[in-house]
Length: 436
Image 1: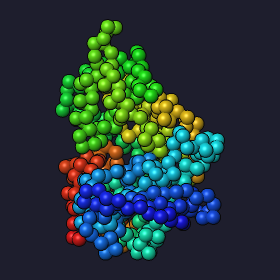
Image 2 (image 1 turned 135 degrees about the horizontal axis):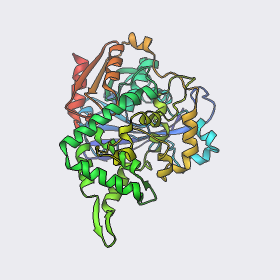
Image 3 (image 1 turned 90 degrees about the horizontal axis):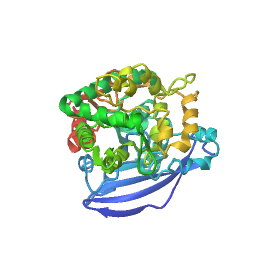
Image 4 (image 1 turned 120 degrees about the vertical axis):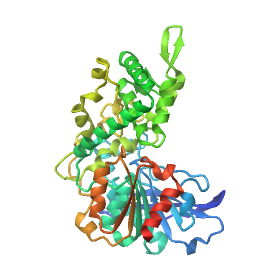
């Protein structure tokens, strides 16, 4: 691995340093193609970084670069009291060799693109982290903080390279060690329905509003700015908001301003369409759509096969057409990716064939080692959110019982984004668990 010259600069209360590295695309072939990684170091102003232990932050996703903080926002405030923090853009995200509709054609055919993207799962991300650790710390272990998918990566870290860790902190990201993608979604749809019913109990006026919008789109799909095709199905996917701390409120405010009166009659407002696009477009995180089901793939013989689409078909209450033909509330979907995403979204449309090949792909390798986790010696603390819409609570607690020495904080005070909403308090609670 090579490391390029770093640059330092300041924001209120912090000193930031940009780091650039090159690592193998395929860690099993270190002499082959290399890609560039980017990570941002954050140290509190006035602290000597050489006297601080490192904390590596792994963002949720997949497909999101590390959050761009300003100063000491959110959990970073608490972390900087004790750590020198490294915010890693996981491969393919942010400034780490981004993979999207503009760059992936450089790889060649859809088959070649799919082969390339097969190297962007948690196993490769952890190998990247180990390369960075040996370069930055001189070989000393560090603490990892994994949010959501970052917690999946941290669990893989514990399975394959625990010698690199002083401790692991996981927020809303303890994965099932053995559930297939199909089983993940079979557990997810009942949770998503509960979140819908809770939303409508809070905002009963939204029942009619959602049905009216869906009926309008069923007759006249709308084109959003940039060309996104908003259908009734696409509208339902706004339910992704329901997994966040204030997501139900955001969805309510979005729905209440949907229509305006025009010379031709009621129409969806420009303001609604613009706001919907900000939640629906994958332009900023296409790997979320391309790789989402592959994060659950561990059986070499079994493809994911558009698992969410197949499971949804077994839950007719989520069928917009059937709902509009009756009187039931329209149910929004959640963290599910469907084939239609790759026709509706211009950021994904050029990658439709690549997505199909990934869905049909076999040869995925197991990501977790239950036997190694059962004898784990790394201190681990995990926040598990009660009835988390994104990560099944029962799956998480079964995994927590498997990992030796893991301490859990199970709470209904926060939703899946608790480490962002709760900030310093959530991180402080986990650090306290490590000491108990």
